[in-house]
Amino acid sequence: MLHLLKNMCLGIPAKIVSLDENRQGEVDYLGTRVKASFLLLEEAKLGDWVIVHAGFAISQMDEEEARETLSLLRELASAQDT
Amino acid sequence: MKEFRDRKVLAGLLRTIGRQAKQAGPPLRLMEVCGTHTMTIHRYGLQPMLEQAGVVLTSGPGCPVCITPDAYHEAAIGLVTGRENIILATFGDMTRVPTPRGSLQTVVPAAGSRLKIVYSPQEALEAARQNPGREVIFFGVGFETTIPSIALTIKQAARERLSNFCVLSALWIIPPPLRAILESGEVRLQGFLYPGHVSAIIGLRPYAFVAEEFGVPGAVAGFEPADILLAVSSVLGQIIQKRPAVANVYGRVVRDEGNPRALAIMDEMLEVKDALWRGLGLIPRSGLRIRDSYGAWDAEKKHGLRLEPGLAELAGCRCGEVLRGALRPPECGLFSRTCNPESPRGPCMVSLEGACLVYYKYSGR
Image (cartoon, rainbow over all chains, first blue to last red; front, top):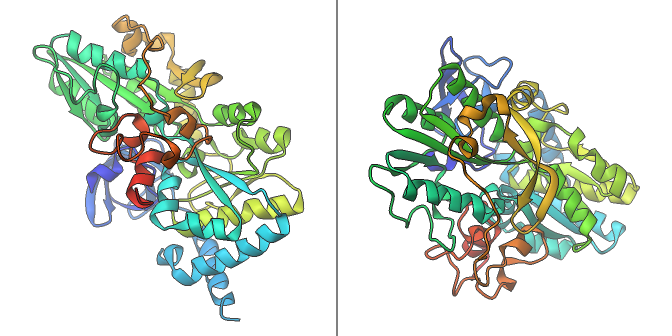
């Protein structure tokens, strides 16, 4: 699975599971622990969900936005029945 | 997250798209710029469903391995075959790109030299720290998604004064080829799906010219099937309302302003240059090079490389047209029979994001 993290744009978020004072650490990516650098993020803390690309976390997930998109999708799915 | 792949959700979105497509009217040809989008579209069988709804999707230049011209691949081959005691580190896909001289995988390295496949530029840097007696050259290729990581790695090498590390950089920025595609008029496009993770770095502004100067709508898309359909629906909505814009339907990852920290490190380490793209030719201000102040870590300067366009193109390979959205992979005479993943004849059949490989894997042969 590690090969998937090489240079593709995978949209699956990873959870920060360790983080040291140099902003290096690990993420849990679909159950696998993978090394990552958090130097490109303003703030990142344990438990945050991030997008990792080529060993660097490049973006933090916005849960509010994620919820909004999900509720839009649920609306669309239920509209099918009417 | 499972809603993003849910059958009912996708069916609902497709019905909405069908209604919108009728209202907007043909032609409705949209380009998915990013190769990973091409993968999602084919992996989930979205293309025939969208065509039934009246929307045609065309793949674009969004595969960094594919658009890097032969000159770079040949320079890398020249280094590993011509110099002793070097470690050439690069991403896996890069090692299989065929050139008239073979690929990094098939050539025989010089004495004491070898190839090292890495998934992060940090691994190449670590190899330099571990092998002080060898020159480690990182062949770094990428769009804005990967560029900040490479820039930061060069900065770290400079800070540590690592004298046995340098970067052969093939760094490309996404908005300029979109202008080139629109200006050439070779393919008429009614909209763009913008790449999700390039946009996570650069934000929305760099695409504004597409809507403002060319009147072409677009939406930043994520990588799940529902993300793709949401973006298509957003583009159709813009067409119907005659209000072309840069919409963002991937707000959970992409901020309007991008990632300021990543943009700052890119600007600190790199400067814009005119660059040659496979298939698209010379595009003004479409590439980045390492700033002179960090020239000691620039493989081109350090090793006196001359990246001139190769004379011999790969015979029969029509990768360039695929990258411009002018040709679908199965329309190429080499596709499948002569050119396949076991013996690729061009980079679009090598990279996981290459349109030819995606078609080969998911859309029948």
